[in-house]
Length: 363
Image (cartoon, rainbow, N blue to C red; front, top):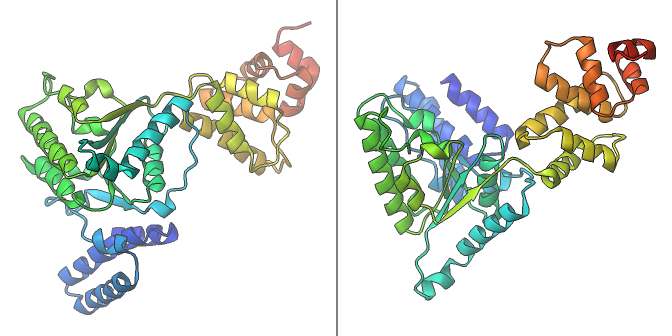
């Protein structure tokens, strides 16, 4: 019961009316099961009133499917109006996404021409590179709610329950104006040839394939994402009309992301500084770069600095790599190797230039 109350508060604060209604319905059911019929009736009355005067999203997605064993929801719903994440994507990914969206927006033309299309997209690549954010961005672009599968609830320890949950999920999303999103897809779509997998999991994949086929045949939209594409069953790949590799950001994307992150805060960073930062943050994912930059900004604010600069970011990256396990000499060398002058290092650490030179073994 406390879980539902907490979720209602969280969803209310984020203005997600669909999920507020969903968790309120679960709360009403629990009150009724506990004998609190008046409270249950009051909640249901409020829900009925809201449905009559509110959006179709709330009405259509109120009865989310649940796992029979745990009674936990096997899906979450996000309304398109609250998907506001800004994305920095490579040109090739932008073009691929644009094409996918345009095909959906012009599906009537394809139907009139007798061209069969499947609105299915598989996103794969390293973790932290924006696959989930991209799925939400697509939902916002075509103004559809997104149903996000909760694989932690879907996968059951009871024989046959996982396949039942998969069917429930697809039947729930079928013929509704929405996008069905399967994140961490490899958890239920592993290769059937894998000798380590048991027969039950192989049956799960067969069920998944059948449900995908039926779902797409009805003109629905399916997006899946995985960090471990090598684990996917061969037949899974054939179910997706479009496949997009989401890689770690290149130099241009890193500079774009950095500029976006620092634009809201006072800073003394030049174009040259941003270039240095992008080169320094080599081979990092989008989420890792955000952690470094936001961590640097946070420390600057905590220390009552009016603005942050290149030293803050280099130091933030050093801390991200080493946590608290480093010596002052190691820090000094790292700052120096990343184009921070001895004078700036001394001021930042709060020591003399002579001490900095000693740490660098300079006479």
